[in-house]
Image (cartoon, rainbow over all chains, first blue to last red; front, side, top):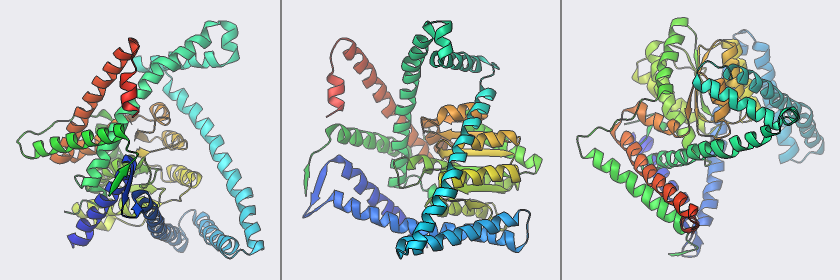
Length: 218
Length: 260
């Protein structure tokens, strides 16, 4: 049992991890094949595995919403719309792109342009408001850190807004200094720490020291 | 076998970091010394948040991020999945409903296996259903709308977000705040960190996310790897100091060395 559920996945993780890492060391040739070509082949395998994963995940989505419709739970109508949209778009997408039927190809683009795109734009517009409300909550002078954020935020805003410069010419200079010096230094420190942390996490995963992503099968 | 166009700096760094990390793990494994990791405040609040959900009889929402396991930011997702195991165990133990939302299909089977295993360990496998780990759709907006909807309809008492996140995630925390939920987040995505700091109650910044998995596991090997990470970090700090001093005096030796 552990051979299939633990040992073989660990071996695959180790080998593929090593191949990807070595590919970044330089151009490595084994006989007539380069490691880069092997990585390209592996990338195709990644797509194949991802297609299976998409199937598994889609089944979860369908079961979840199918059950909601079947039991007439609150909001079941929305679930019905989701299932119909998902299966419908899958069908017209397959007929339009895979079988190249012009009517369905146009319909695929029409739905994407007139439904998906406006919904996406709406989402990003909402994010703008969420940023404002989160900034309002965070920029309250509750403690020393909050006060520093508040003061720095106000200075940067005044430095970037035209009204700031008309109040005092030093605001843009101060704002630029805040962004270029303390902000960049802090960001770089986080970046270096995170890069080392990411490396160690990757090393733990590739070498099998950390196997929790498999569901801790011992 | 032939090697050409070798990136010297990358290769040397890779070998050094690997050898140091594995050496520390090996040394700790063969000694009685138990390395200690400093308390990570944000993580302590996860237990508090799940406890709050228990008292209120409301669910806990968990997201392991919006990044895949096949991209450069995959370690963030793996760190998030390690924390998911801890959260799932707590939820199973305290009989709290867990809602784990997933954006990437590749992450779904892993998250489901982790949660299922933790429920099994706690003897609560009957509580693990299709509704526990939910795939919402592999599109930023589809996932975001799905999470916003869950926040509004199911009103979780705790919202835990650990992994790689992008722009839409600020909305997760804001919707959580609107519905009175506690948000604990962690990411190493630099552009997202300020938004999490502003919108969440507790935030794990950068490398804290990676250390969190080890901190929660209490496993000797995993904790030892964090010690190896600290040794590497100390060397990087020394290099930075030398680089700063040499650059101040007009020498670019360190930069040139690292660019080879």
